[in-house]
Amino acid sequence: MPEAINTETVRYLLETAQTKRGWISDLAWSPRGDILAISSGGGVALYVDAFGGAPSQLIDSPNSPVKAVAFSPDGQYMATGGADKTVRVYQIDQQTRTAHEIYVMRGHSDSVECVAFSPHGGLLASGSADHSVRIWIPEIGKPYTTFHGHSAEVSTLAFALEGHVLVSGGWDNTLRLWDLKEETQGTTLGVHDDWVRDIATSAGGTIIASASKDMTVRLWDMYETNQSNVLQAHFGGADCAAFSPDSSLLATGGRDNQIKLWNAISGALLRTIHAHEKPVLALAFNPTGTMLVSGGGDNLVKAWTVQRA
Image (cartoon, rainbow, N blue to C red):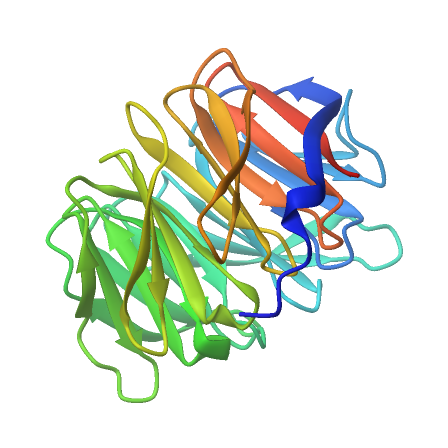
């Protein structure tokens, strides 16, 4: 993990904007930070250059909730996973900054709960309620391989160690490692006391944070493949986590309706705010680390400026 900046100078999160979307499932920033994607029960809303009010583009999905959204590292593509069992790939027009569907990839036999691009963008991973993890080649819309190992729904995915390893978490309470070169069958990294809701990765993927219904967020050293810290995070359950781009801050959200900011190295709690009127379900820092967006069970997405002294 990179050398920490002075996280103790974080004063507070200042709410700067909000918008209402139905049943928010995921949030993602484009690599340049000029597009924010919000997936929800009605589709995907894209906000370009500004947040709040009406979206710049709305990709409707009225009959099948979109469960997850992610951008490729070069910003050329956006992927979604849906309750209709599909993974969809969109090309982003770099002039108009609009998304156009180019591939619909089928293979899962149940809802697609999570998607993640590899750091170099050549691979796209998806996890499903069918207990499987699938790897796709997004540029051509074709399958690459399938992993089996979870005994329940795969709810979250993240690439680690610069894309050499994929980490998945699920309703079987486990975190599993998939070596993409060796194609290993899901070595267990660790076990929570309840289902794993979200995984966040630090810069370079050397540390991951796993948020669980067991109310903890656990930090894992990917070089040593062991647990390095346990944060007693959110009463009722931790639902989401996000590292700041410089990996000095970790933001978490959960069933207590709060966002908490932590020193990502020491695990010290820096700030707590009552952010939503219902659970905080999704978090994402923009690429500069100056803004954090949160999605809540109150159907609101809020933008927070990270204030420093």
